Image (tube, rainbow, N blue to C red; front, side, top):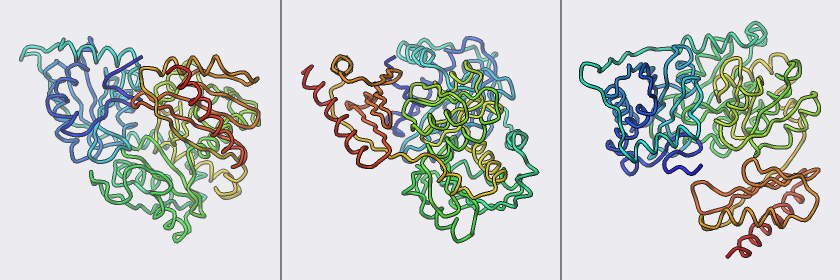
Length: 455
């Protein structure tokens, strides 16, 4: 479904380029109008310098539309989602651009079940915005704004889903890199509540993200890595800008990509569960398939995007979902990405193990990945996809859930048209560097041949 403003996770754009006061006011009124049953809206924001003016603009439009507004403050996105469920609100709005640079901001719209609104509702909001079919109320129906701090309740719920006694007895130490973002207002408090000694870096809220930048990529986490070794910590955790993701490091300072951490969660959290279905996007590593085979489970593949993982988890009644970007979905708490919840669960895995996090990670199957892209006009993307399918001659498992994924016994190629840029993205994975390079050459060749075929 083609959308003009919504992307994979909400609406994002540069401040005072797309996100002007006028745009914020009108798109917020459109969001309010898309929810015909007026009631309560929960709002929270990250710590970006532009978040206050955007947040006030959102609040103004919802008040003018007849909604009561509850402001939960500067908090992680999953806390807003928790609040929507906990307070039985009609919807939630999070002002955040997640891992985007500080000149960006955004809006995530949360449905009444705590999950971001689906593609149909996103398109409905855009249509209302384009046609200016707002639903403003008369002055006597304007509601009020209430401020509530739910951090304690949110932390207590997370604590209730882990083995606090085992974690406390283990006397763990953790390094937390909050990235000058909202993870710093929750995760240090949460881990200390579990009896873990915490060392926080980049913990001060600063919307310019001066410490290590807002994206928790391994190359940005060298200070966290060094701090872990120096302090002899058991593990480290870093969050993105709105703390719905968690990237982990072991006691040696090695930083894991998300594929490693979600595989550990899959292995240790599902092995004793009756429903061993693990929900994950088509871009995730074959590690999850290997773990599923090991524990007698099953992998349920989805299109790329947290909405698809959340909805499929509910449909399959699965305990767990995960994304290769470090997003963990733990259904007993809530079926959405939740960075602080992931941090607590990682502490529990370490506490229940007789070995270190590095040895747990080294015990997982080893794969190598590579990514590349090819320019392609948006106008021919559909025909290119059709040409690729028509010209696959070898026997290979093909998945078309999101793009085209060719699965071989020890490797895969994912070819996916970008929804925002005139390019095709190619992802490959294999059990050796040499095989990975060969698969990338094959993937690039497949796309280039298809583009020439339709031009």
